[in-house]
Image (tube, rainbow, N blue to C red):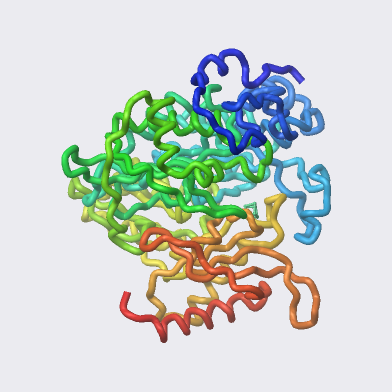
Length: 554
Ligand code: SF4
């Protein structure tokens, strides 16, 4: 394997001289403590070659010679830096997930994640994704809960042509996965919503322009998640990102952002903490780079299970984190600032018809658990264009929005979307249910999720036709929490469970009462509170009936 050692000399030069004495975690593999010798296979792979370099090999070697020519270290590591994961071989049940070797689970096809920073799309971009889906991905397309769109069934031979089509319309897959800065999620109504505190779009673009695909931050201890929202709705799940900028009005300085650091879910969930700092729009990219720099330099690289920023934050706390950020990275103090108010509404997905500040309207609509297809994406683009709109957005609730619709064309657009089974006035169940990829494609999955989520929605709509409360049902195929199991009103974590006959079958560990926004907190995992997949509709119905009977106002 060609190697450009990482950290290389240039990266070492960019790294700040570290003078702060840290005594507790000398064994955590922190670069800032002089631990440059890789302490696990992932770190070794990143040191052997930067993930970004794999693109050249895909274009010049692998796409011509086929799947079998791919270096295993690229296949299961570096290709992620370009949004590519091998998908799960069909027909392998969840009981084998933890038993089989990675190569036994690998299919010859890939999942391709297209990053959509800020969730912003033009109709031309949406059409291009639809065409790529139809031509190269067997029509597959899922809107993710981080505003991306994922395609499946991708052949390595087609990847260069796909990049060409996407990049021709300004889209990319750069650092869509891997140990690097992932998609920057942003308020899907940035710049247009009537009630906006501040538009963070400039910061999203600037961070992307300066740092995405830049080797300064292409070797982080693990993934790094960013969120920016100036909406009072707080529509970017800021509590569970590595860094988040949340719109607030400072009493002296005006609109800006409150900084949150160190959130994340998976098997050790942790809510982000406020640094207590107010940041003006123009300072957001520098503060972002400072926090990523801390993660790169001080993040724990010894154990992959402790390599997220939340573990460093747990050990340092927000006061020390802010001090290191100010002293060693920004070289200037930050301004103290207020906490954001609680979100102005419980639904944060922007589904429905809402006024824009320019007098036009935006129309949010709901597919089921984010699942669409290439033909539908093209039809959405056509419907938007036919109603005078060139702009769309994806949301972190696996929904979409058409922007810039004149008042007299709203009803016609709503009808066009609903004809595609994309509901603007969905049931609470369709609106509030999200699902991760699951066993259909994901190699880590234990159970099926997307199909089960679609069936559950249909079932609940029949059983509880009058239920109208905001509700979130988050369906996950394994403990990794990609669909935010701990933050759903009803969080479902896929695992094998025993049925009444004592047989192992697909099912879920239930978490109840999680939420983000109002009084954010994780759901409670009650010991033994597990349901088989077959029992799921009965179980959810029982919980919701009881909730509806016994809930108090608000
Ligand atoms: Fe795969 Fe598990 Fe993430 Fe679902 S939660 S997408 S099954 S890793």
